[in-house]
Image 1 (cartoon, rainbow, N blue to C red):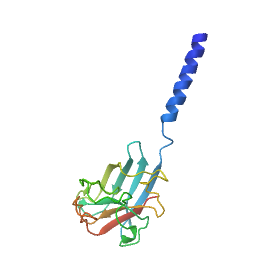
Image 2 (image 1 turned 45 degrees about the vertical axis):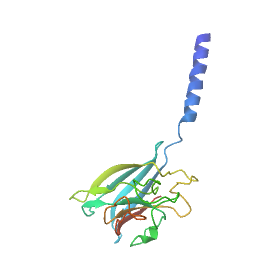
Image 3 (image 1 turned 120 degrees about the horizontal axis):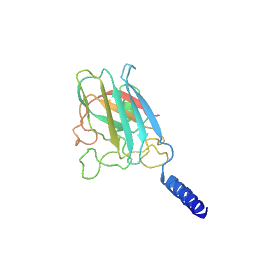
Image 4 (image 1 turned 120 degrees about the vertical axis):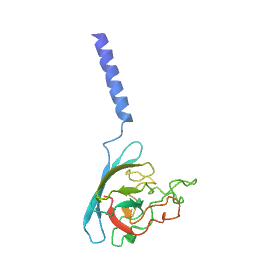
Length: 173
């Protein structure tokens, strides 16, 4: 009987200690993507993980080819989507995935949209968070948006990556 009490106490202690190390329920957000005409062309779903924010992108009917994909600094999507501001960059880094000074928190790999115009892909962004109150939170005072550009990001030209116009935008909510 004493063995069972000690075992049960040890098991409860292990459960409570382990539980304290686990994160709260996963935080998530979404951003419906619309083109300049207001037509929905896809969606972006974001989930906070221990490693960063897992971003699930699903688009339909976009032009095939390589397109830049970024988190932008302002949660507004008024065509031509310049209302979304520049890239999300709370640490004031230079643009570019390979920049020795770091990169914009909103810089992400290009999307490679096939001839069909439809793509579903997952991207892990380790430089942003969905946790409110953190310096790299997409939920800052003016919110954030995700943008798909007309061209590809060259990963070096500061501050935009020479990615061209903005063809789809979604406010992160």
